[in-house]
Length: 474
Image (cartoon, rainbow, N blue to C red; front, top):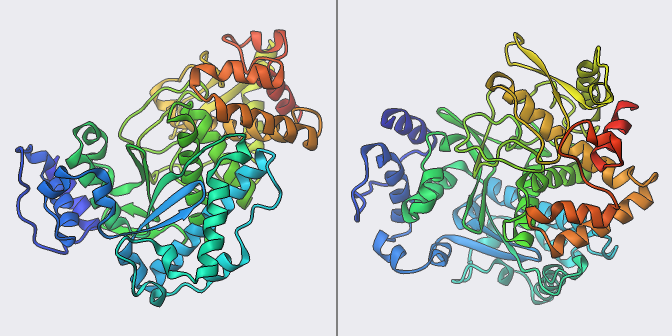
């Protein structure tokens, strides 16, 4: 394993310094590549393992990162990325995405209509250049580089957004978001996390790290703005100029929901909400961190959307432009869902077979099978391994399609549906444990989310059953 890890990661992260062997407990030879990566990060900042271990995790953030309070988020970015034009432009795009995603969540939650950042703040953001960051304060607070009026306007806006009043809360606080414009430092930092925290090591020290786009370290959400591959990396916006903001908004939405729930919200619901928000903001979803994402570090179970819940995400090798993703979600994936539903319903005798069954196909096309609802409750079951990639793509699309219906069609028209959905989000913000989800849906909508058996979806009103009946007609 060591040879493959070293060759892949070293190709992505060129050696910038000569690092000594790591002090402390011995490591297995298979872990040597990750220790070397961690050492590179520390050495560039003139830090030792002892200094970091004797301090706290916040001690890491004090070295080499700039910080910006942005309402519901606190942004951390490597200062080295602010010394050249491309890095500054990509960080500015990320900040703009964080402004936009907060406005989106306020709108969904039925909050005040006027939540845009002040004009002074937006003008300052548009003026950024490497010269803006020539003299960053010792504490890394990037807001100090703005004029007094702009700084005060940003602080006032951030306080209002971070209070959570728009969600009916008395306090929300900020989700910690680390944006790495270039992959090299992201890979090093994740390796460092695994070196310092034995509980994170199993997920962080993974041979596929060189292709991950995001990682969760305790309460920190890390994201890089470059795709990875053997011997190369590529800016996410190279193939699609909108992809950078989409990725940041998706990851930030997950971080916001994790902050609300202390990471206890069902990951499938959180992922579907984040995906639906990206489409609402940018009219598409062209990201690579969920669905059929091969080679992930772990697989988990989700009651809302059975499938995967990894700590890291990678660029999938085979599903970038499959039948599920061809529309990039511009239609909320309803066309792809409708086609699979029609194929799955062929020859069906029962209502479940006609309105709640979808066809799955293996990568090579040699295998196909029908999979039936429920998908939104504990009754969902994963198919055999050959069909699992297609199943994960189905679930990704299904979650988005269901939430789009819930927010725009459930109550018969968009205004009434949006109001009821806003009420649901207010409830979700106050009680977000996965075990409480059935109660919350019942309280907000007056009927169950789903059923334990497929036939029961249509026997009495359920949200999933009504969505399937609507989908079958559209």
